[in-house]
Image (tube, rainbow, N blue to C red; front, top):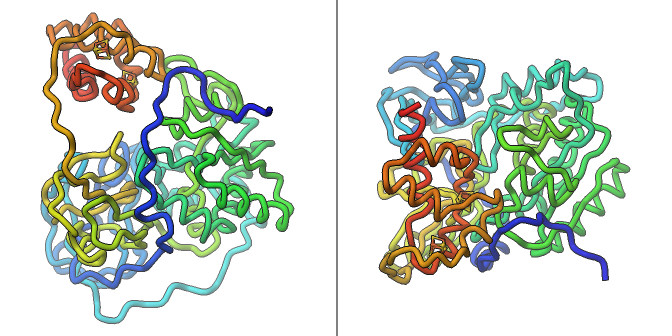
Length: 436
Ligand code: SF4
Ligand code: SF4
Protein backbone atom coordinates (compact mmCIF):
# COMPACT_ATOMS: atom_id res chain seq x y z
CA UNK A 1 0.00 0.00 0.00
CA UNK A 2 1.27 3.50 -0.86
CA UNK A 3 2.32 5.57 2.15
CA UNK A 4 0.42 8.84 2.54
CA UNK A 5 3.01 11.62 2.91
CA UNK A 6 3.40 13.51 6.18
CA UNK A 7 6.23 14.87 8.33
CA UNK A 8 8.16 12.44 10.46
CA UNK A 9 8.93 13.97 13.88
CA UNK A 10 6.19 14.46 16.47
CA UNK A 11 2.82 16.05 15.77
CA UNK A 12 -0.63 15.27 17.15
CA UNK A 13 -4.07 14.29 15.84
CA UNK A 14 -6.73 16.54 17.39
CA UNK A 15 -10.37 15.96 16.37
CA UNK A 16 -10.77 18.25 13.34
CA UNK A 17 -14.22 19.62 14.36
CA UNK A 18 -14.71 21.11 10.92
CA UNK A 19 -18.21 19.71 10.77
CA UNK A 20 -19.77 22.94 12.08
CA UNK A 21 -18.89 25.12 9.10
CA UNK A 22 -17.47 22.93 6.32
CA UNK A 23 -20.69 22.83 4.31
CA UNK A 24 -21.37 26.57 4.69
CA UNK A 25 -20.66 28.29 1.36
CA UNK A 26 -18.89 31.66 1.62
CA UNK A 27 -21.36 34.47 2.35
CA UNK A 28 -20.65 38.18 2.09
CA UNK A 29 -21.22 40.15 5.31
CA UNK A 30 -23.72 43.03 4.90
CA UNK A 31 -21.83 46.30 5.25
CA UNK A 32 -21.18 47.03 8.96
CA UNK A 33 -22.02 50.50 10.27
CA UNK A 34 -18.40 51.10 11.32
CA UNK A 35 -15.01 49.50 10.63
CA UNK A 36 -11.87 49.64 12.77
CA UNK A 37 -8.94 49.31 10.38
CA UNK A 38 -5.70 48.74 12.28
CA UNK A 39 -2.34 50.01 11.04
CA UNK A 40 -0.59 46.88 12.29
CA UNK A 41 -2.14 43.97 10.42
CA UNK A 42 1.11 42.32 9.46
CA UNK A 43 4.36 41.10 10.91
CA UNK A 44 6.85 43.94 11.21
CA UNK A 45 6.60 47.68 11.66
CA UNK A 46 3.09 49.22 11.73
CA UNK A 47 2.06 51.18 8.65
CA UNK A 48 2.23 54.99 8.78
CA UNK A 49 -1.17 56.73 8.67
CA UNK A 50 -1.76 58.61 5.40
CA UNK A 51 -5.16 59.99 6.40
CA UNK A 52 -6.51 62.05 9.28
CA UNK A 53 -9.75 62.41 11.19
CA UNK A 54 -12.47 63.85 8.94
CA UNK A 55 -10.84 62.72 5.66
CA UNK A 56 -12.87 60.83 3.09
CA UNK A 57 -11.51 57.56 1.71
CA UNK A 58 -12.23 55.49 -1.38
CA UNK A 59 -12.69 51.72 -1.39
CA UNK A 60 -9.29 50.13 -2.02
CA UNK A 61 -7.38 53.40 -1.42
CA UNK A 62 -4.07 53.21 0.42
CA UNK A 63 -4.57 54.71 3.89
CA UNK A 64 -1.47 53.35 5.62
CA UNK A 65 2.05 53.13 4.16
CA UNK A 66 4.60 50.43 4.96
CA UNK A 67 7.11 51.99 7.35
CA UNK A 68 10.04 49.61 7.15
CA UNK A 69 11.57 46.75 5.18
CA UNK A 70 9.25 44.26 6.89
CA UNK A 71 5.93 46.12 6.83
CA UNK A 72 2.91 46.37 4.58
CA UNK A 73 0.50 48.96 3.17
CA UNK A 74 -3.05 49.13 4.52
CA UNK A 75 -6.07 49.95 2.31
CA UNK A 76 -9.57 51.11 3.04
CA UNK A 77 -12.16 48.32 2.62
CA UNK A 78 -14.88 50.87 1.89
CA UNK A 79 -15.63 54.33 0.60
CA UNK A 80 -16.52 56.46 3.58
CA UNK A 81 -15.16 58.94 6.09
CA UNK A 82 -12.70 58.69 8.95
CA UNK A 83 -14.51 59.32 12.21
CA UNK A 84 -11.38 59.13 14.32
CA UNK A 85 -7.99 57.51 14.74
CA UNK A 86 -7.77 55.63 18.00
CA UNK A 87 -5.62 53.11 19.84
CA UNK A 88 -6.87 49.53 19.65
CA UNK A 89 -5.78 46.23 21.12
CA UNK A 90 -5.99 43.42 18.58
CA UNK A 91 -6.82 39.80 19.41
CA UNK A 92 -3.08 38.96 19.41
CA UNK A 93 -2.59 41.67 22.10
CA UNK A 94 -0.79 44.01 19.68
CA UNK A 95 -1.65 47.63 20.42
CA UNK A 96 -1.65 50.10 17.56
CA UNK A 97 -3.49 53.01 15.96
CA UNK A 98 -6.57 52.26 13.90
CA UNK A 99 -8.85 54.23 11.58
CA UNK A 100 -12.50 54.19 12.59
CA UNK A 101 -14.27 54.40 9.22
CA UNK A 102 -17.96 55.06 8.66
CA UNK A 103 -18.90 53.55 5.27
CA UNK A 104 -20.94 55.53 2.72
CA UNK A 105 -24.42 54.16 2.11
CA UNK A 106 -23.63 53.38 -1.53
CA UNK A 107 -20.39 51.56 -2.24
CA UNK A 108 -18.65 51.43 -5.64
CA UNK A 109 -18.84 48.10 -7.49
CA UNK A 110 -15.63 46.10 -7.93
CA UNK A 111 -13.95 46.91 -11.28
CA UNK A 112 -14.68 44.34 -13.99
CA UNK A 113 -11.57 44.98 -16.05
CA UNK A 114 -8.92 42.28 -15.71
CA UNK A 115 -5.15 42.35 -16.20
CA UNK A 116 -3.22 39.83 -18.30
CA UNK A 117 -0.53 38.86 -15.78
CA UNK A 118 1.39 36.83 -18.37
CA UNK A 119 2.41 40.09 -20.02
CA UNK A 120 4.04 41.35 -16.81
CA UNK A 121 7.53 40.39 -15.68
CA UNK A 122 8.46 39.11 -12.22
CA UNK A 123 9.50 42.50 -10.83
CA UNK A 124 6.28 44.18 -12.05
CA UNK A 125 4.22 41.42 -10.42
CA UNK A 126 6.19 41.72 -7.19
CA UNK A 127 5.75 45.46 -7.06
CA UNK A 128 1.95 45.08 -7.54
CA UNK A 129 1.85 42.56 -4.68
CA UNK A 130 3.58 45.14 -2.47
CA UNK A 131 1.25 47.95 -3.59
CA UNK A 132 -1.83 45.83 -2.86
CA UNK A 133 -0.75 45.11 0.74
CA UNK A 134 -0.64 41.31 0.43
CA UNK A 135 0.46 39.42 3.54
CA UNK A 136 0.43 35.72 4.47
CA UNK A 137 -3.20 34.91 5.23
CA UNK A 138 -2.67 31.65 7.09
CA UNK A 139 -2.14 33.68 10.25
CA UNK A 140 1.55 34.60 10.03
CA UNK A 141 0.85 37.85 8.09
CA UNK A 142 4.41 38.05 6.79
CA UNK A 143 4.52 40.65 3.96
CA UNK A 144 4.32 38.66 0.72
CA UNK A 145 6.54 40.99 -1.34
CA UNK A 146 9.38 40.41 1.14
CA UNK A 147 8.93 36.63 1.08
CA UNK A 148 8.89 36.52 -2.72
CA UNK A 149 11.95 38.78 -3.16
CA UNK A 150 14.57 36.13 -3.79
CA UNK A 151 18.16 37.25 -3.08
CA UNK A 152 20.55 36.90 -6.02
CA UNK A 153 22.58 34.18 -4.27
CA UNK A 154 19.52 31.95 -3.68
CA UNK A 155 17.70 29.69 -6.11
CA UNK A 156 14.17 28.42 -5.71
CA UNK A 157 13.20 25.18 -7.42
CA UNK A 158 9.84 24.57 -5.71
CA UNK A 159 6.86 26.68 -4.73
CA UNK A 160 4.80 24.80 -2.14
CA UNK A 161 1.23 25.91 -1.50
CA UNK A 162 -0.26 25.25 1.91
CA UNK A 163 -3.81 23.98 1.50
CA UNK A 164 -3.52 21.95 4.68
CA UNK A 165 -5.63 23.96 7.15
CA UNK A 166 -4.63 21.55 9.93
CA UNK A 167 -6.05 23.64 12.80
CA UNK A 168 -9.34 22.18 14.07
CA UNK A 169 -12.59 24.07 13.30
CA UNK A 170 -11.23 26.31 10.51
CA UNK A 171 -12.78 25.89 7.07
CA UNK A 172 -12.01 29.20 5.33
CA UNK A 173 -9.24 27.73 3.16
CA UNK A 174 -11.38 24.65 2.52
CA UNK A 175 -14.15 26.84 1.10
CA UNK A 176 -11.64 28.94 -0.88
CA UNK A 177 -10.28 25.77 -2.50
CA UNK A 178 -13.81 24.60 -3.39
CA UNK A 179 -15.26 27.94 -4.45
CA UNK A 180 -12.26 29.96 -5.65
CA UNK A 181 -9.89 27.12 -6.58
CA UNK A 182 -9.34 28.39 -10.13
CA UNK A 183 -8.33 31.83 -8.86
CA UNK A 184 -6.11 30.40 -6.15
CA UNK A 185 -4.25 28.09 -8.56
CA UNK A 186 -3.77 30.94 -11.03
CA UNK A 187 -2.41 32.96 -8.10
CA UNK A 188 0.04 30.09 -7.44
CA UNK A 189 1.18 30.27 -11.09
CA UNK A 190 1.79 34.02 -10.64
CA UNK A 191 3.97 33.37 -7.58
CA UNK A 192 5.85 30.60 -9.41
CA UNK A 193 6.69 33.13 -12.14
CA UNK A 194 7.94 35.67 -9.57
CA UNK A 195 10.17 33.24 -7.65
CA UNK A 196 11.14 31.30 -10.81
CA UNK A 197 10.11 27.93 -9.35
CA UNK A 198 10.16 24.94 -11.68
CA UNK A 199 7.74 22.92 -9.54
CA UNK A 200 4.47 24.02 -7.95
CA UNK A 201 2.97 21.62 -5.42
CA UNK A 202 -0.23 22.08 -3.41
CA UNK A 203 -0.48 20.06 -0.19
CA UNK A 204 -4.01 19.26 1.07
CA UNK A 205 -4.85 16.99 4.00
CA UNK A 206 -6.90 13.89 3.31
CA UNK A 207 -9.89 15.15 5.33
CA UNK A 208 -10.62 17.34 2.28
CA UNK A 209 -10.90 14.74 -0.50
CA UNK A 210 -13.39 16.95 -2.39
CA UNK A 211 -10.79 19.76 -2.54
CA UNK A 212 -8.12 17.37 -3.78
CA UNK A 213 -10.41 16.13 -6.58
CA UNK A 214 -11.58 19.64 -7.45
CA UNK A 215 -8.06 21.10 -7.63
CA UNK A 216 -6.89 18.14 -9.72
CA UNK A 217 -9.73 18.73 -12.17
CA UNK A 218 -8.81 22.42 -12.51
CA UNK A 219 -5.16 21.55 -13.07
CA UNK A 220 -6.13 19.09 -15.79
CA UNK A 221 -8.55 21.46 -17.48
CA UNK A 222 -6.18 24.44 -17.42
CA UNK A 223 -3.07 22.41 -18.17
CA UNK A 224 -1.22 23.93 -15.21
CA UNK A 225 2.09 22.26 -14.27
CA UNK A 226 0.87 21.95 -10.67
CA UNK A 227 0.96 18.80 -8.51
CA UNK A 228 -1.83 18.29 -5.97
CA UNK A 229 -0.64 16.10 -3.10
CA UNK A 230 -2.91 14.50 -0.50
CA UNK A 231 -1.29 14.48 2.96
CA UNK A 232 -2.03 12.44 6.05
CA UNK A 233 -3.92 14.44 8.67
CA UNK A 234 -1.47 15.59 11.28
CA UNK A 235 -1.04 18.84 13.19
CA UNK A 236 1.03 21.14 12.68
CA UNK A 237 1.45 20.16 9.03
CA UNK A 238 0.65 23.72 7.92
CA UNK A 239 3.91 24.94 9.40
CA UNK A 240 6.52 25.56 6.71
CA UNK A 241 9.03 23.15 8.26
CA UNK A 242 6.57 20.29 8.53
CA UNK A 243 5.04 20.96 5.11
CA UNK A 244 8.39 20.91 3.33
CA UNK A 245 9.35 17.70 5.11
CA UNK A 246 6.01 16.12 4.15
CA UNK A 247 6.05 17.23 0.51
CA UNK A 248 9.70 17.53 -0.49
CA UNK A 249 11.36 15.50 2.26
CA UNK A 250 13.58 18.51 2.97
CA UNK A 251 14.60 19.59 6.49
CA UNK A 252 15.00 23.29 7.24
CA UNK A 253 17.94 23.64 9.64
CA UNK A 254 17.52 25.61 12.88
CA UNK A 255 17.43 29.36 12.24
CA UNK A 256 17.06 28.90 8.46
CA UNK A 257 14.20 29.54 6.04
CA UNK A 258 12.51 27.50 3.28
CA UNK A 259 14.59 29.60 0.87
CA UNK A 260 17.73 27.98 2.31
CA UNK A 261 16.49 24.61 1.03
CA UNK A 262 15.37 25.93 -2.36
CA UNK A 263 11.68 26.42 -1.60
CA UNK A 264 9.08 29.10 -1.01
CA UNK A 265 5.87 28.30 0.88
CA UNK A 266 2.63 30.24 0.82
CA UNK A 267 -0.93 29.69 1.97
CA UNK A 268 -3.72 28.93 -0.55
CA UNK A 269 -5.72 31.95 0.71
CA UNK A 270 -2.70 34.15 -0.01
CA UNK A 271 -2.56 32.74 -3.56
CA UNK A 272 -6.22 33.69 -3.98
CA UNK A 273 -5.47 37.22 -2.68
CA UNK A 274 -2.56 37.45 -5.13
CA UNK A 275 -4.82 36.54 -8.03
CA UNK A 276 -7.27 39.24 -6.95
CA UNK A 277 -4.47 41.77 -6.48
CA UNK A 278 -2.84 41.17 -9.85
CA UNK A 279 -5.71 40.18 -12.13
CA UNK A 280 -8.59 42.10 -10.53
CA UNK A 281 -6.41 44.97 -9.18
CA UNK A 282 -8.00 44.54 -5.77
CA UNK A 283 -5.96 45.44 -2.71
CA UNK A 284 -6.22 43.18 0.36
CA UNK A 285 -9.14 44.75 2.19
CA UNK A 286 -11.40 41.77 2.79
CA UNK A 287 -10.98 38.07 3.58
CA UNK A 288 -12.85 34.86 4.35
CA UNK A 289 -13.13 34.07 8.06
CA UNK A 290 -14.73 30.96 9.63
CA UNK A 291 -17.14 31.92 12.41
CA UNK A 292 -17.65 28.61 14.12
CA UNK A 293 -17.58 26.48 17.25
CA UNK A 294 -20.11 24.73 19.49
CA UNK A 295 -21.58 28.03 20.72
CA UNK A 296 -22.28 29.76 17.38
CA UNK A 297 -25.96 29.58 16.38
CA UNK A 298 -25.31 29.41 12.60
CA UNK A 299 -21.63 28.75 11.83
CA UNK A 300 -20.56 30.30 8.53
CA UNK A 301 -17.61 31.16 6.34
CA UNK A 302 -17.91 34.89 5.92
CA UNK A 303 -16.32 37.23 3.38
CA UNK A 304 -15.88 40.33 5.53
CA UNK A 305 -14.04 43.65 5.21
CA UNK A 306 -10.85 43.90 7.24
CA UNK A 307 -11.70 45.98 10.30
CA UNK A 308 -15.06 44.30 10.90
CA UNK A 309 -15.79 44.03 14.62
CA UNK A 310 -16.14 40.50 15.97
CA UNK A 311 -19.59 41.53 17.28
CA UNK A 312 -20.79 42.17 13.69
CA UNK A 313 -19.58 38.72 12.63
CA UNK A 314 -21.31 37.12 15.60
CA UNK A 315 -24.59 38.93 14.84
CA UNK A 316 -24.44 37.77 11.22
CA UNK A 317 -24.09 34.18 12.43
CA UNK A 318 -27.11 34.39 14.76
CA UNK A 319 -25.11 35.12 17.90
CA UNK A 320 -24.43 32.47 20.54
CA UNK A 321 -26.55 29.35 20.83
CA UNK A 322 -25.19 28.99 24.37
CA UNK A 323 -22.81 31.01 26.49
CA UNK A 324 -19.26 30.39 25.24
CA UNK A 325 -16.48 29.76 27.69
CA UNK A 326 -13.83 31.00 25.32
CA UNK A 327 -13.57 33.22 22.25
CA UNK A 328 -10.58 32.63 20.01
CA UNK A 329 -9.27 34.53 17.01
CA UNK A 330 -7.67 31.93 14.67
CA UNK A 331 -7.50 28.21 15.42
CA UNK A 332 -7.70 26.59 18.85
CA UNK A 333 -4.06 25.45 18.80
CA UNK A 334 -2.26 28.65 17.79
CA UNK A 335 -4.99 31.29 17.94
CA UNK A 336 -5.48 34.03 20.52
CA UNK A 337 -8.13 34.16 23.25
CA UNK A 338 -9.89 37.49 23.51
CA UNK A 339 -12.85 38.86 25.47
CA UNK A 340 -13.86 42.15 23.86
CA UNK A 341 -16.19 41.50 20.92
CA UNK A 342 -15.50 45.03 19.64
CA UNK A 343 -12.04 43.74 18.66
CA UNK A 344 -11.61 44.15 14.88
CA UNK A 345 -10.59 41.36 12.52
CA UNK A 346 -7.41 41.85 10.50
CA UNK A 347 -5.83 40.46 7.33
CA UNK A 348 -4.63 37.46 9.37
CA UNK A 349 -7.98 36.54 10.98
CA UNK A 350 -8.75 33.04 9.73
CA UNK A 351 -11.33 32.19 12.37
CA UNK A 352 -13.58 33.44 15.14
CA UNK A 353 -14.31 30.50 17.44
CA UNK A 354 -16.84 30.40 20.27
CA UNK A 355 -16.05 27.31 22.29
CA UNK A 356 -18.15 25.62 24.95
CA UNK A 357 -17.18 24.48 28.42
CA UNK A 358 -13.75 22.89 28.47
CA UNK A 359 -12.83 20.13 30.92
CA UNK A 360 -11.01 21.68 33.87
CA UNK A 361 -7.69 20.14 34.81
CA UNK A 362 -5.43 21.02 37.67
CA UNK A 363 -1.73 21.10 36.81
CA UNK A 364 0.46 18.66 38.70
CA UNK A 365 4.22 18.28 38.84
CA UNK A 366 5.95 17.01 35.69
CA UNK A 367 5.72 13.21 35.50
CA UNK A 368 8.84 12.90 33.36
CA UNK A 369 6.80 10.80 30.95
CA UNK A 370 8.50 12.21 27.84
CA UNK A 371 5.27 12.57 25.87
CA UNK A 372 5.98 16.24 25.15
CA UNK A 373 9.34 15.30 23.64
CA UNK A 374 7.69 12.68 21.42
CA UNK A 375 5.03 15.18 20.30
CA UNK A 376 7.34 18.12 19.55
CA UNK A 377 7.71 18.45 15.76
CA UNK A 378 10.95 20.39 16.21
CA UNK A 379 12.47 17.70 18.46
CA UNK A 380 12.85 20.10 21.39
CA UNK A 381 12.73 19.08 25.04
CA UNK A 382 9.65 20.95 26.29
CA UNK A 383 9.81 19.59 29.87
CA UNK A 384 13.41 20.75 30.21
CA UNK A 385 12.62 24.16 28.72
CA UNK A 386 9.65 24.47 31.07
CA UNK A 387 11.91 23.75 34.04
CA UNK A 388 14.52 26.27 32.97
CA UNK A 389 11.99 29.03 32.32
CA UNK A 390 10.06 28.36 35.55
CA UNK A 391 13.34 28.66 37.46
CA UNK A 392 14.23 31.93 35.69
CA UNK A 393 17.15 30.25 33.88
CA UNK A 394 16.49 32.01 30.60
CA UNK A 395 20.01 31.74 29.26
CA UNK A 396 19.95 27.97 29.68
CA UNK A 397 16.56 27.87 27.94
CA UNK A 398 17.91 29.98 25.06
CA UNK A 399 20.90 27.64 24.81
CA UNK A 400 18.48 24.70 24.62
CA UNK A 401 16.94 26.01 21.37
CA UNK A 402 13.98 27.81 22.96
CA UNK A 403 13.86 30.21 20.00
CA UNK A 404 13.16 27.28 17.66
CA UNK A 405 9.85 26.67 19.46
CA UNK A 406 6.95 27.28 17.05
CA UNK A 407 4.41 27.66 19.86
CA UNK A 408 2.38 24.96 18.10
CA UNK A 409 0.93 23.58 21.35
CA UNK A 410 1.58 19.87 20.62
CA UNK A 411 3.48 19.47 23.91
CA UNK A 412 0.68 20.99 25.99
CA UNK A 413 -1.91 18.94 24.09
CA UNK A 414 -0.35 15.63 25.19
CA UNK A 415 0.92 16.61 28.65
CA UNK A 416 -0.83 14.44 31.31
CA UNK A 417 0.28 16.90 34.01
CA UNK A 418 -1.56 19.70 32.16
CA UNK A 419 1.36 22.07 32.49
CA UNK A 420 1.05 25.45 30.73
CA UNK A 421 3.91 24.59 28.40
CA UNK A 422 3.17 26.91 25.45
CA UNK A 423 2.39 29.87 27.65
CA UNK A 424 5.69 29.25 29.45
CA UNK A 425 7.61 29.01 26.14
CA UNK A 426 6.12 32.34 25.00
CA UNK A 427 7.04 34.04 28.28
CA UNK A 428 10.50 32.46 28.23
CA UNK A 429 11.16 33.78 24.72
CA UNK A 430 10.14 37.31 25.66
CA UNK A 431 12.19 37.40 28.84
CA UNK A 432 15.11 35.52 27.26
CA UNK A 433 15.29 38.10 24.45
CA UNK A 434 15.33 40.95 26.99
CA UNK A 435 18.20 39.38 28.93
CA UNK A 436 20.39 39.07 25.81
S1 SF4 B 1 5.04 24.45 21.46
FE1 SF4 B 1 7.25 24.49 21.08
S2 SF4 B 1 8.10 22.99 22.48
FE2 SF4 B 1 5.89 22.62 22.38
S3 SF4 B 1 5.69 21.06 20.80
FE3 SF4 B 1 5.45 23.04 19.76
S4 SF4 B 1 7.51 23.54 19.07
FE4 SF4 B 1 7.74 21.92 20.57
S1 SF4 C 1 4.45 15.63 28.87
FE1 SF4 C 1 4.15 16.91 30.69
S2 SF4 C 1 4.44 15.48 32.37
FE2 SF4 C 1 5.28 14.45 30.58
S3 SF4 C 1 7.46 15.02 30.58
FE3 SF4 C 1 6.42 16.53 29.33
S4 SF4 C 1 5.99 18.20 30.74
FE4 SF4 C 1 6.42 16.41 32.01
